[in-house]
Image (cartoon, rainbow, N blue to C red; front, top):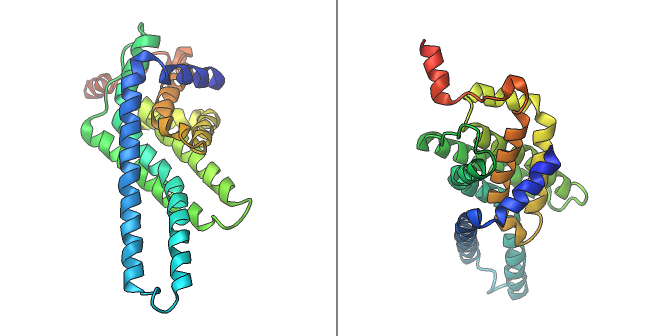
Length: 243
C-alpha cells in the first residue's frame, strides 16, 4: 500500500498535469529560503558590528565569517521542513484536486479547506516543525544523534501534518485524528519517506508536492475498506448533525 503510493506520487510529480504547480512550488520554496538566508545574514552582520572583533582579533573575525557561512547553510537545512510545511499548505488543495480527478474520478471530490483553517494548519505545521528542528539543531555537534533526531522528528511531523491536510478535505477533524491513530504506523512510514527526501539536495525542493501527492494516494488507499469507503464530507457531516 505504502510502496504503491510512493511510486504513484513519484510519477505524479513529474506528470504534465502537475508540472506547473511543481515549478511554482519550487519558486516559492527558493524565494522563502533566500529570504531566510538574507534575514539570518543580516542578523549575523548586526552581531559582528556590535562586537567589533576585526580591530583586536582579525583572525577570529575571518574565522567567524567562514563559520557563519557554513553555519547558515546548516541552519537552512534544519529550517527547510518548516518552509516545506508552508509551501505544502499553500499548494495541497491544487495538488489534491489534480490527483483525485486523474486517479479517482469515480469518487466524490474532496473539499478545499477554508482559507482560515488551511492557514492555521500551515502555520501550526511550520511552527511545530521550526521548534522541533531548532532543538535538533542544538544536537548538531553530537555525532550519531544529530541525523537520527532530525530524521525521526521530521518523519513524525511530516507524516502527521501532510496526512491531516490530505484527509481534512474529506473528514471532520475528529475523524482525521481517528484515521491517523488507526494507521499510525503507515502514516509514520510515509513521513519517513518524505523526511528522507528532505536530506537529498536539490531533490528536496519538490518535497511539498511529493508529500501532498503521496498522502492523497495513501489516504485513498487507507479508506477503501467497506467501513470507510465513503468518506464523510464536512458539509454532509454538518447536515447530519443538524438533523
